Image (tube, rainbow, N blue to C red; front, side):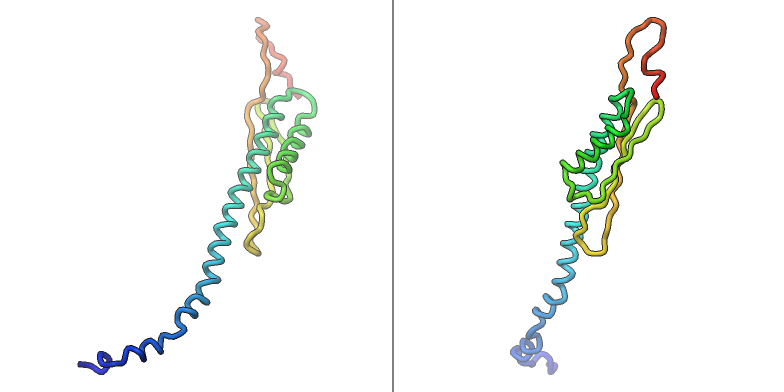
Length: 149
């Protein structure tokens, strides 16, 4: 038999004394960082939902108003909804409306909550669709929606 086989089991335990504490001290910061990253990405995901909900609310206003200051109303609606849904979830939020002759949209952007230091995530969502317009049957083929501003 070799000399290692006859070694005293107590001396092996004495050599391993403190190894668990050292392993825990080395792994704890890594585990904390992984947990913080999971929470960070959950906050980014939630901030995207807040931005999308606000953009959809602003787009509903933009698509429904045929004339007037639809841009101002839809941007204000989007900003109001960001404040209602989670102003602390989406920092530096900005809303911008746009459109052409057939559709309108609202874009909401901002910064997600920062959980992990030095990681900043920008969130940008856009929602839009065709302009809603009542088209009465005039029999001459004209509509009040064709000459929109």
